[in-house]
Amino acid sequence: LAALALAVWATACGSRPNEERIVGQWRARDGAEAVELQYLFRADGTCETSRIPCRWRIVRSSGDEVTVEITNLYGPSESVIQFDGDDAFTNPWYGPAVRFRRVE
Image (cartoon, rainbow, N blue to C red; front, side, top):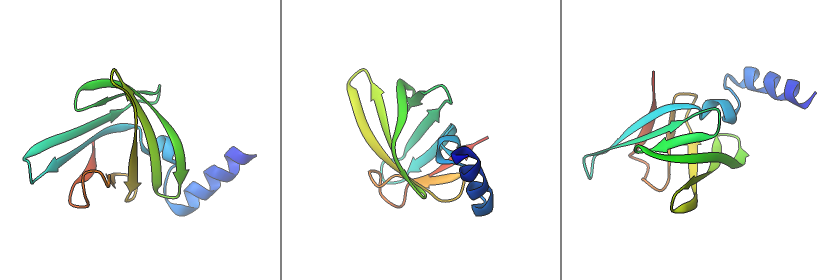
């Protein structure tokens, strides 16, 4: 019943659940440093951050803000993602000018 309520809410709001929105390949350009930033989140909980293999899981989710724990060989760290629709997000760590977009 809870899953049905979430699906109805997501449809009404025009957006998918955050667990689904995050899955995919994302890119951004940090203009200040001329660096391309990349995330690849897979549905099986594996990911790559700038080509470094990792694991991910959502630790908090409220509306369009999601806190993701990303664990690589150096250990876990948390990253905040603020969605703007289903195909874009910002991450406060990089600043508001760096906008990640979904890569098709």
